[in-house]
Length: 612
Image 1 (cartoon, helix red, strand yellow):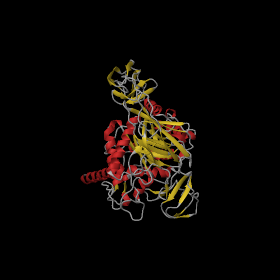
Image 2 (cartoon, helix red, strand yellow; image 1 turned 90 degrees about the horizontal axis):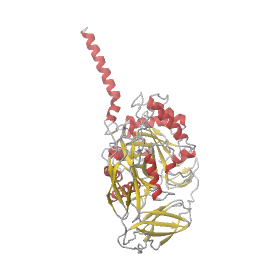
Image 3 (cartoon, one colour; image 1 turned 90 degrees about the vertical axis):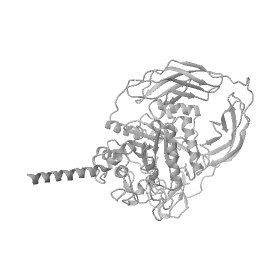
């Protein structure tokens, strides 16, 4: 009996050790410090175009309610790739109307995030000066429009690793180190509980790091795996990572087999790498640790026009069955967990516009699937009405309000201040309302919003009159904008900057006109999109002051770039470095010598082609 008891105990010890070893990836990932809770247990993220590329323009307030998070794409460099200054001008919107639509979506419980970069928005923070410019300009954009957070969509040559930078936990390459510092500074400025930080790298910058790491491999692209140190250094404040599982070449999974995009097999293999962790460049002493399941979102194109690697609804949901429910594929078995990851965050798509173009197939189909996994808990109880709304201070152009906090059964997440046709969303019990007209009466009401998107009844209206201008009857216009310059241009856009105007009562903004078009900006810079290639435009710029006076105009003539004369991409052609081709309406530059094959179209293989 004694011998049998010993054997029995030994057997149980072996079983316990085995269970612990199998559970180790989940145990390690569960110890990652938690960023603030995301908008729902199963989230759908969509990118909204701040341009029209043929998919059709959509007003923000008309975005399908199936989306939880709307990424406004894109804010882009306004002063060159290495300066770090980021600019954003709403397309086909006035600032006022754009802010109102952001606030409207937020009133529905949606999160609206500004995405920086994209295929044409390369950002290299190679110096501390560029880092500081990035921090200041991004912070300003978020505060100006009331965005809920920041999405990092650096592509192209924004991130790379210098030779010898082989430790992802302690990077030394300036563009990596400065980006990490900038993201942490911006996050600290807004506070983890009120700010979303997400990233949308390509597979080239993440999963390819299992095979090649740019700082340590010979004769490979120095951008391979370059996002890994950024993800690692911000994983405590990162709400989710949404790798673009499209426009990708074949990627080696943890089974050491190539996986090709557009199939359930590809998505399961790519996500399993994030949830299991993997050795960088297959070095067992340099392991990238697993992320939490709620930090992982699968990135997909909404239809065949949106990007290479479109995956049918059935294949996507087969992948979700494998990842969430543990219904394993025959082609790939998950390593981190064989029973599934019920906490997997959800799906991302490029894009909201292409989804509408495709009759909402993506949002309708996948919203129904995700809701069936975790049916939303109904909550119809609205917060209590904000009370004691009062004026803290006021001026000629602003009113500072505060009020007593509301209460709610699931928690108050914020407040909306309404005045006229405009509104402002805030998370605290005070709001600074700016850009008002002097000596004008406004009526303010406040509503509370809970975690389920329910709004309270409006507060008792508060009537406030802004202060009159103290200079009497002001007839002095601002000075003329000076030194107008073109800081960037392409076939379809022009970026202008100028010296700020001065005025005795303060400049409130600028108007840029060209032909019959007009845009309004608050700062002395403007990005004008939607232009025709190889066309001459005359731009006129005026400044306005708080009394409504308008300066004389400055002007500049600009001719947009001519379309590239590069030949169209074709299969079975031998290309060398710096060859140029056109594909899908864009011009690409060859990065590596190769003979092209079907499936290796420039939009599908960023390792071979760079968008010009």
